[in-house]
Length: 107
Length: 121
Image 1 (cartoon, rainbow over the protein chains, first blue to last red):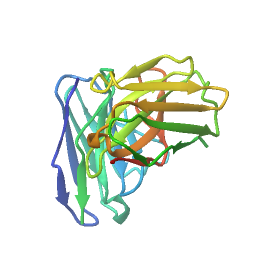
Image 2: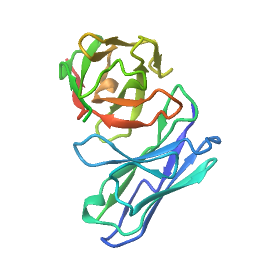
Image 3: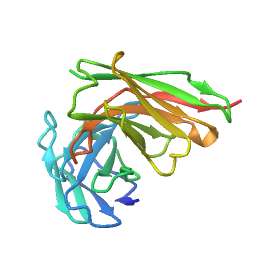
Image 4: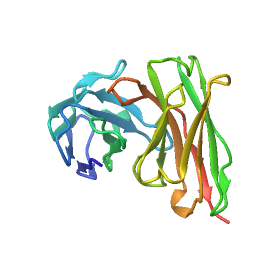
């Protein structure tokens, strides 16, 4: 199975900050990568797919980049509603589909 | 607007079988464009894909759980179900049902709210 490693596992930030979260795959996955946002007690929400395509309705302050094995999720100006945990997921090799361990963005 | 809703017992005894159902509304589970899947999340931990199923009944499972998992579909009820046998405390988690495309685009664009299943005697 492809292992997805996110860094950092958590960090503190302030409203207005530019935030970058990284995700590394244990092998090359082209751009078969999605990012999700999860708030406490809620289901994950799809933000980005194909590494850089914004899901409909997601604010443009979210962006994704990368290909191969290294990927980033960037929030250009952190808003209060963006404090959450973010997960990456690969869909290059299946089964299984695999997720990163998550990155918690805290105030 | 597609909606998914999990249902089933919130408490299961060790060694017994966990059974959950996902009811789909706002669209047909027989839509050939989608697969229907289960993902779980132990308390305070990350996400683990359990498996998925196509409306035809073709299913795939996570190799780490394959020996204990069965996913089935009932198109007449617009539902699909999860059975996980021989459960232990390690199977305590929030269980989500979700949808992904039938093509290689296996990312989840629609999720249920999740249901907590606790394994305890």
